[in-house]
Image (cartoon, rainbow, N blue to C red; front, side):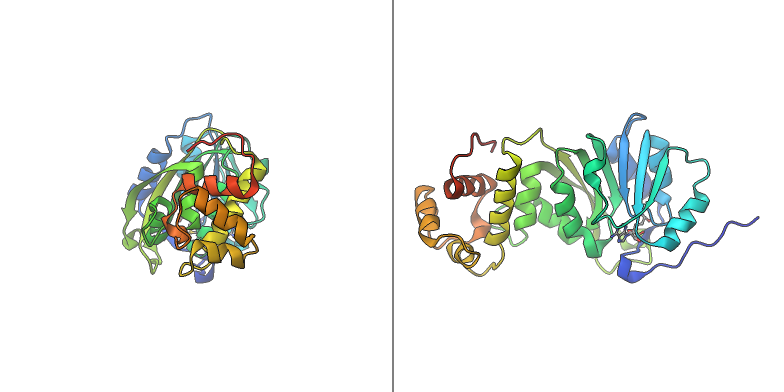
Amino acid sequence: MDSPLPPAAIKRLGQNFLVDPNIVRKIVSLAELTPTDTVLEIGPGRGILTEALCRAAGHVTAIEVDPRLHAYLTGQQRGLSNLTLVLADAMTYPIEHLPIGTIVVANLPYYLSTPLLFRLLNQHNRFHRLILMLQNEVADRLVAKPGSSAYGALSVMAQYTADITKAFKVSGQCFRPRPEVGSAVVLLRARKQGDLKPEEESRLATLVKAAFAHRRKTLANSLRDKGYDQKLVAAALNSLHIPLSARGEVLSITQFIELTRHLYGGFSSLRH
Ligand code: SAM
């Protein structure tokens, strides 16, 4: 009997399917999987990566939001006994229930890559490493250094939680349909447990988001607009020798941590 045709791509769900087995091999090799590893795949699509992951890892959980693709994959799943296929939205699926040490490998839907990244980074103590296909522009933001135009809240929070390498670019020809933007694969290796407690990390994240909310404004004005006490901010900047006229994009991660410490007081130790 002929196998059923895979469902057609839906643009609004970021369905640009990989069709190049070489790129699949490169992604799986970068993930350095062993038969005891647990993998989370977001958006298995037509399953080209899923199948390779199931061959290399101990167990794969694959979360797909499109019921047509979920049904198609369920039909193709025979022989993949180590695959748990879930019909769910990766933005609401309880990733905090996955085992500690899970490795995330995904060709992410580009329309959702930044919120998904923030969600995954928030669980950086759970995921040992993440191997992700992203828009090239988002990959550049992940590795951007202070002072560059790509440096923003995503750069700070990602580099706070992980050591990041932009591994390789991927040509549009490797997908069907071709994405409208360039693509790249990044490797994020989570650092050991942070020195900041979870509530301190969430204060850092709030401050960093506020600092980059209006890139044209000074840091002091951006923070004031988000409700931070103006005098406290001025005093904190002064004691950190950061000019009042500075913008958020010039601060290093260390300086953001120090600033959070000054504004809230009492962080125990600092890692950077
Ligand atoms: N992994 C496949 C590949 O490499 O060919 C498909 C990758 S495609 C770029 C992104 C996949 O994510 C699609 O299958 C899409 O349906 C799925 N997707 C989109 N939004 C999602 C969401 N919120 N939660 C889970 N999957 C989602």
